[in-house]
Length: 197
Image (cartoon, rainbow, N blue to C red; front, side, top):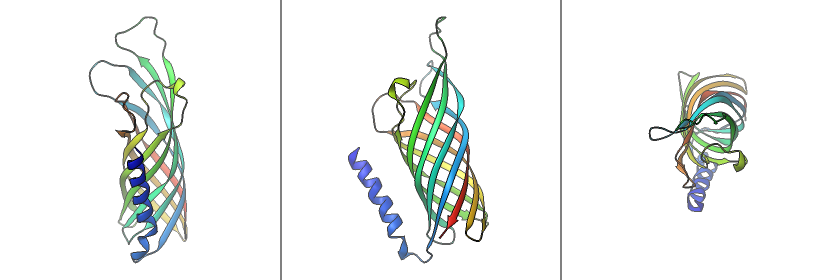
């Protein structure tokens, strides 16, 4: 895990601080809010059932423009996902549905491709660390490397940027711990207000 984390930090620093070898220098710092549905993806037949109670994401994102159509995104995001454990197999008449929270602190690294000036496609990975209390956990820990795919629209007025970003995200694709195999899946929207400098 230490080797993976070191490699991730080194690559991120290299991309961000050595991007000045490319032509355009354009930085954007954005406040981000996201919302949508969360679920759990698992392998096998017959297991616990979960219902989504939604998620919220808050973050501070940084974008470094590499050229006219490509930029690198990174930042720090906090996600609070609410789930309801509402079924177990085999059925138990004494079972009571149980609410659970999965709170994750993420460092994303995405490539952002702009097309037709106001539209973009972003994709990449994130390093995720679960921050909630293990005693409240209703499923496996989500510490690991996740994947992200989104498409969106943006509008820029002078130095102020507004964007909306529908996305699909899967946490824990590469696990930092060996327990379980369920992956947290988020489908939702991110909204951002940014400033270019």
